[in-house]
Length: 239
Ligand SMILES: [Zn+2]
Image 1 (cartoon, protein in one colour):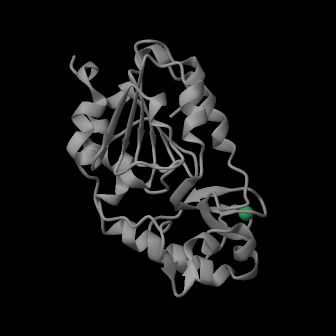
Image 2: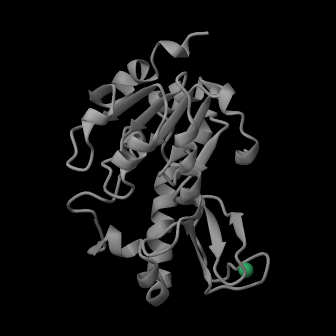
């Protein structure tokens, strides 16, 4: 999608989504208590500083995550969002491609894409697919091997796509802003909700979070997303 050419008047829904959206597809979040892989906390495996010292191990961790992604499918919430077609803009923290698999045309990946690789030597990003990273793999642009990392935004790495969150302050009364499946621990959901000028603001999480002020939202649903997605999307979905 060409974000700069996006016609906001043609958009009815802007979704800000997190791991909770994909959890019902069977994708683990790797963030909660006990989020360990081979006794390493997921938070450490997803840290750029750890990758610099342990690239092979980090690649193995992401090999496993891509393999997991290859074995899941979009759920009813992904499909309901996709049914809005070009009327939906997705700002997602998720690195999976389930929104795309469901058919969503407008998806911004704030934290990168699990199915891509990123060469830190030349900056090239490319679609790698969901298979494992092998020792003989290299950057197709410059040939670098050790400089190649998973195409996701790691901890202690900048997230250039965050600049696109400023779109929220350009929304109009006809827009719905829906926050789905995010605890607000990584990106400040309260700040987004305050800056957002949409006419209707909706929150849907599995449970209340210490990081999210529900008073900032017009409607709050604490329930699995697949059960409440119709209410989250609301009456504007018709037509
Ligand atoms: Zn390169």
